[in-house]
Image (cartoon, rainbow over all chains, first blue to last red; front, side, top):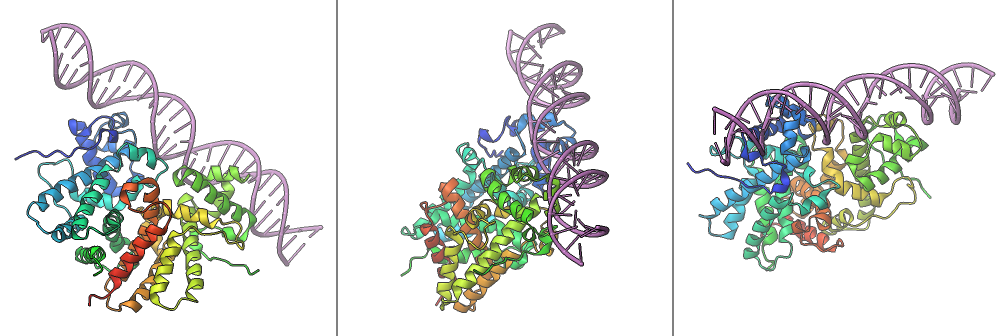
Length: 223
Length: 223
DNA sequence: CTTAAATGATAGTATTACTATTATATTAGC
DNA sequence: GCTAATATAATAGTAATACTATCATTTAAG
């Protein structure tokens, strides 16, 4: 069984949590707690207590809670990129690749046994519920330079290139996919919490249909 | 000169800030401060000091900062709805109405002299930078019942109805417009702060083109 | 002129987001 | 097996935040 390692920029941690047992427990438990109580309610104190360690120890890995969230979310995008690459091996048409990418964005993930300390399905729910919080801050420009949004940028670039294969004249591929990706997140949230903002029934098929149709119609050349 | 009053649900304040001079000063100054330092950095203490009042007095109007933000954002959607209604008087085709709605979402607003205590242009920038924070919380379900997202829901409904006039068979009008509205916000943010996520140049024309084309192509029946 | 309501002044509390210090345990190199 | 470095634990402390409470004063309404 081969071991897979998702690499996250070293600006996103103080000490690499993937390298130690305590680090992995921090990751694992913070995912669990964030899903349970939401980002705002999580504190380093609570994480520390839950893994029977101390606040100071958690601070050795992450400068603050914001950096921890950014780490987790970048890990998610890194992970998604790996998944996409795997899937694209057997997909030949750009259209099928985009369709599959949308499915991956919206469908619940299943646990990768090679990475026991990260619960991918839970992490995905955290991304849905917390994602915009990592860039909607006054520090966005500094953090952008430090690579806080690298994972998202890359996914967006990859999908843009595929779209340009379908229609090289399409003017807004990056705007389109940043929109699609964020809609993939927010529609999941709306179905659950603000249903008047969506037409999808629970279950992900409607969202997939909505996004796929939107994407393909938009890219298509006006003949 | 007629006076215009945007009404916001009474669940969004403790004491109506529009009814007193102090209340209006709180609104005015909190808009100013939120734009300057961002939502996270604003405190009731800072607002109070800036208007030469006290923390306790600000708490008499809003239960907490989150409620204040929700109030301001709902005010914005109420305002936008009024603007839309005005504009639609002279617009006849549903297509033109949608086009104009997108323009309004993205173009900088100009100050309404009838409401001197609210700087609409600044408020719009706050909505761009802070909007998702009002629903991405663990209290979303409770707050939804209390009408925290009423303004957004309404705009979304209005635009959905117009879209259905163009194509009554379109399956996802609410999903489409919640996506379009949130893209209108986030593209403005991306152009400024995360340019790899957008193809638009600064200035709002590109964003308008992107969103208009996306909307119309998506709604159109597949013949 | 009286009373109620709004505001100001001040104080206090629990929690948070850290920083610092020292002690102890573990590990790696010699 | 000893030493030195490193990681972690234990504990304490600070400044800021997000409130709540109390009481005095001003203002406005009948």
